Amino acid sequence: MECFSCVAMIAIFYILFDVNYFLRVILTILWGRLFEKKKKLFETTTIYGICFTQDVDLILKHMNNARYLRELDFARFYFYDRTEIYGTIVKRGGSAVQGASSIRYRRAIPIFTLYKVTTKLIYWEDKHFYIEQQFITLTDNFIRAVVLSRQTTTGLKVPVQDIIAELEPEIRQPEPTKELQLWLDSMEESSQSLKKQK
Image: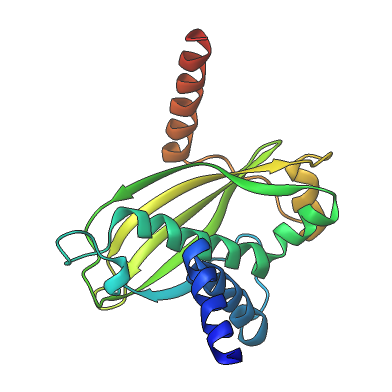
């Protein structure tokens, strides 16, 4: 009877929650803490994955678009933990959420293909910091997708620059790349357009 209750409880959790997502987050961060060194803010972090049967689209040949975004979560949380940026934000009473992202799919990741996701800090502003992530297949080292993401801090009473300075005082803010600046401009244009629709 106890065995049946346990199986029923597990089944209920799988029905109500995306259990594999939470397990993957925990295992990814745990792996980094046990086997990887801390990273400096401008160092690139890397996680690995495989396009499996649960990741494919309707034609069962390659990774579906939603799975790319899911993998980015794991890579982002890993980056947060390895660089200690998220812990420092939380220590100051804040949090960080995904504020925006732009993904460019260059070539599909076929089923059963090994890949890595790299993450690096590229810029920051008063309430935001920006990361670039890439999906790279291991067989040919080809960048399959590239992503720009804006991480927005919430509840933080100091600018992101103070968080950066606390972690690595010697770091200076870089200039935004042309690609990033164009994306920032497009988001500002979109914001202004939406304000006019009120």
